[in-house]
Length: 417
Image (cartoon, rainbow, N blue to C red):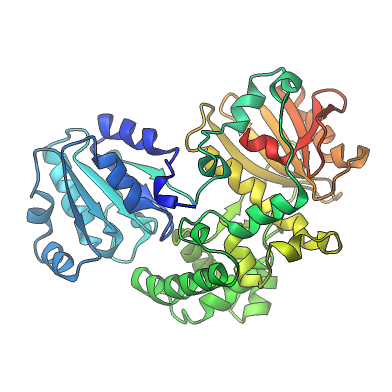
């Protein structure tokens, strides 16, 4: 796959922000294509590009940051990897306060630049961040997919008409491949080697650049543990015991991994509706290719029926990630959560629209479904009443079927069709 030819679905969002916001920040993990996206955007605008990956340019920016950010006032100054020079943020703030013209700066950052060591300015009210994540399945297929909008539009069965189901082996392949552009150019051992080297670079080098935490040698071990726990409830005490980090200190390491775009914490939903709801977040690794590499498994392994216990959490993470990616460009504004209560009722994904409507999604590795798969969704449906739009079990089977009041079953492939 030639990743350079893949159009990113957030490109139009970046162009929109340049029209009405002084500072646009393309933020995402290393090697997800931020620089490539900035170049694609730049082809249609008057611009000058500089990168903090150059030692000479970094030195010049650090020496006189205000003069540096004032070097191109005729159009857009594109600054790549801005987190390497956090003093630029204050200079950009000062410059924008003097001239609030839209599209003045386009920044890229391989971390949450507002949480980088040495950053003193948030650029609040002056900047908009566009999150760039690894390729979605739709982007690889040259589709601007929008699953939640398709559900919010109603008439679910007709919208699902003509869906082409995928095989178990295809789902396993997509999971192991992940969405990193460079990893998508490789297969087998070469892909695994890429991911291992990538993680070494980020966890050993980038983490130290952006964090003042002590004992960063613990970070890699913690990440290995978390990658094995993807789609499970995060319990500080368990992670502390397995890694040897004091429970009182572990939150700092978790925040660092989130800032490096290597970890997401999916918040819980439902405390307003059930006192028995568990408030702990769920661990999700933003790319299933990374999970497979850390755990030393490939698509052949996870695709075999006897390894269904491995496929389940990976499929759930995969679906959560895909719907999370689509949120950036979706025509529908929504937030995502998980639900679990002390009675062991759970729903993998609760999607809440800004108008308060609710969509629930359950993910199954099996190619069949039953009444019990809908238990958590029925409970939420009955609690929220008319706010409940629909609940869907996504599975590895082929059928699209209704399953009672506003409940459906569909192939996982529906999320990108």
